Length: 543
Image (cartoon, rainbow, N blue to C red):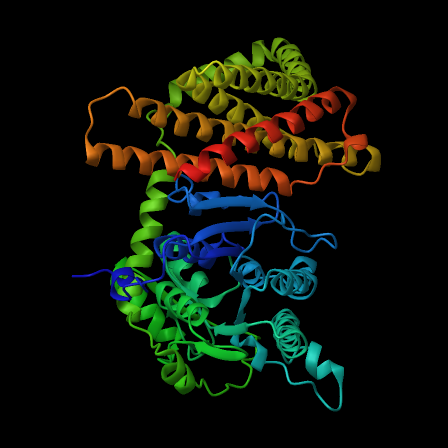
């Protein structure tokens, strides 16, 4: 039987390497599925997320693809820029809805993503003449302002978090519409409701994830009041299929509602979950929340103009979701204890504590001092070692390329890339002086330097691999199929090198704010970047 993902058959017959997509929030629940689907269509995809987003696990299947790369950048920054060498044909803005799906609390980040973040991406769409697709929410229909009292709006009658998110999404939609009217940007808005599927977050807040989380972790589902509150669970791949259809169609200034119109009560959802979990208690508790008035879910225009309708039933989608969550939890399950101390052992321990308490205190004090020294001294030491090793390995790789020792160059560059990445990750733990402006600026510029060096190392690695394949072509017997295959492999590596160089060029570094020890190294890297760009530019036309 075909899986839910297979049912939508996402092959839409677009030309290979024709489109480049920038996906904000690409490492999130919806974003990661969208990135996978776009790559499968032949898109070159750049996933952009703010630094410190720890969701790269969602993208692990894509990280080895030559048509995919990640970019850590805050799209809310006033000076947000994309390298002029990168020309996206499509910009997908999911970051704001991903932020809301991953947290039950409205935050400044959520509001900025819907305002400044949306504006920055729309400005980019104007500059690059790209199509802009905003993934919004049916929450825009909520929260009609009271004509008599703000208490009715932000008081006990409704959840201010929900209403604030509704206003944020409404603003993002209006801003998108204005750019369409004022600048002629090709824009499309897609609204979603109650998305679910593999990789969904199980944080408290969103009703469906909460019910699934309770069932798996507590073997119990708690329903508010009578459990008759309704939802429209829409499977993630149904949504992604609709988003891609909206992006590839000739739809300008259109709004599409990608919603499963099958309305389910929380009680019926709980009963369906019970079918897959087994023994499960369903309890009802008194709740104070007030359900906002329902609104009509109109998807007829979506069906007619987009040719979209949901294909995956709730039962099938839920089965795949729960299977994914359980398999993930089994992998992370801690080992069980093999020994439970008996009464005799506990007695011996009590006697030891009586006679050895003084010694224990001394050992504890020494251990704490050693731990403190480890925390304060070791991280900076390891940080410096990683930078030094990265610089040394990259220099060895550079020399190896010039000496035509390409296999060795690839290995050294790979080591350098890993060294710089480790050092970059360590900068995220420099939390204690973060309130000192001078130090925080140094850390930020150092992090940019490391990201720059990491991508230069990656470009060197892929260049060396591509050149090694080309070099081997002249050493074997003539085999047309083998040559064609080798040329294809070489081209993939050179394209990967180009992507890494493009990302490196987009990194902005203020040289005067770098620590003194890194300034000369940065100058050397800039010179080497030019040499590497020339080398790749010389090889690229051969394909």
